[in-house]
Amino acid sequence: MTMNAAVLEDVGRLRLRRVRRPEPGPGEVVLKIEANTICGTDLRIVSGAKTAGVRPGVILGHEFAGRVAAVGDGVAGVPVGAQATCSIVVGCLRCAACQSGREHLCENLILFGYELDGGLAEYLLVPRVAMEHGNLVVVERELPATTLALAEPVSCCLNGARQVAVAPGETVVVLGAGPIGLLHIALARLAGATIFATGRPGRLEAALSLGATEAFDLTGDALTREIMQRTGGRGADVVIVAVGDLSLVNQALELAAFGGRVNYFAGFPKGSAATMDPNLIHYRELLVSGGSNARRADVARAVGLLSSGALDVGSMVTHQFPLSELDEAMAAVRQRRGLKVAVVPDEVMAG
Image (cartoon, rainbow, N blue to C red):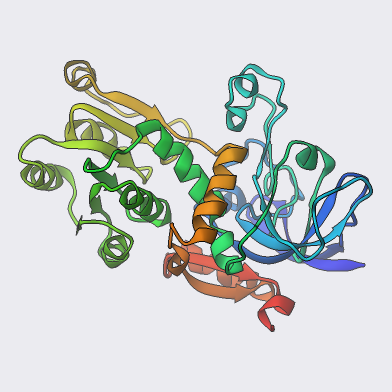
């Protein structure tokens, strides 16, 4: 049997093709995909800007949701028909990073949608190694598939949020109101913070609706003055850089209060460098961190927050396209139409 899938044939060449439909071997599970949201990283993979860990010929897509379609011999406790997603990070569980509880930084890391076939297809195989590591997350309380697909970016934001540990009543500045910035806003609101967000004019309303106290279309010195005025000259307890803009690297430090925490969550172009004033870190005793990928526990927590309704971010999926209109879906992301774009297999979209 065959299926439709978005195959990365080469740099700049993502094609919808008929490929063999996966069948589960011993210890494996096959998901019938119901939605896959597209990430800016997908665009970077297609363009060749991101090549590390990417296998030529891979089926793209790492933000997916589906249902268990078939289970292989030896798989227990995974009912056919159950709604599910996966932690996309498959670590070796043996290297120093894995042994320290950071399997998302594994030295031998493989990822769904990079090395393992991803969710821009009608079906997805969860291989034995991923099943043995507990990457499959079966949903206890069902939710819209397009919302469940957001569990992957939410899990990454949870990893970043853990670095800064926002407490109730603290002030948070989120620099960038793209999908990742919006998720950080929603998580900061869940933590009980006062949130100031910056971004393009078309994203400010979404920032406010997801929990920002104030949202500004400001940059540079004008932004610094605004934040300082809003915080009585103190600065923010937490600053999250959610867009890979090198001009924000030092400004994030300037916006932080004494004893504040700064998280460079966004990825920056490979080989980029920025100038920062180390005395800002030294004299203000700032804690500076990053955030990359997510642990299996982060994905499980993300699914719990989404399915319980505690984290209400389903409205971020503003556009849906059938898999047969893959090119149009990718163009919508490239042209920044709406917030998040979901691709849904034609059969599922037809009801």
